[in-house]
Length: 141
Image 1 (cartoon, rainbow, N blue to C red):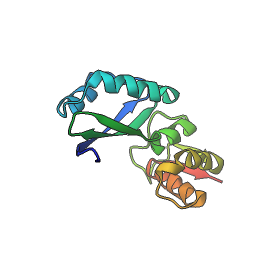
Image 2: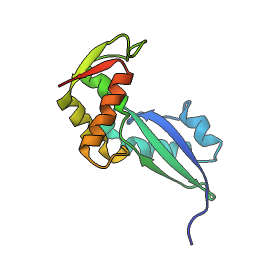
Image 3: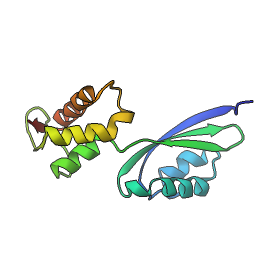
């Protein structure tokens, strides 16, 4: 028989740096999950993403057990990294704060492909280019 799901928790935590402090502790504590057990498992699985923001979807079961799915870091993080910027434009569309090449956009699209809603790499690149434009970062050929 399948386990009964009581809910889901979506969080974004820096890879390899989960700890019981907010936002992790309160979000998991109110669901009755063992916080330290989650932190140890998450940190072990996300060593390769050390310091990068990692979205995680935690499935909580009725018996207080849990599973979690780790997604790849957000496209905005990869775009800022490629453009060597701390943040995007305050006025995207008017003020351009940096640029990335089409090759960099393709590389980001390949990394994000499994999390994007795209059938092929060409569509994924369009999504990444749109994200870059909405951050005030132009994509050069």
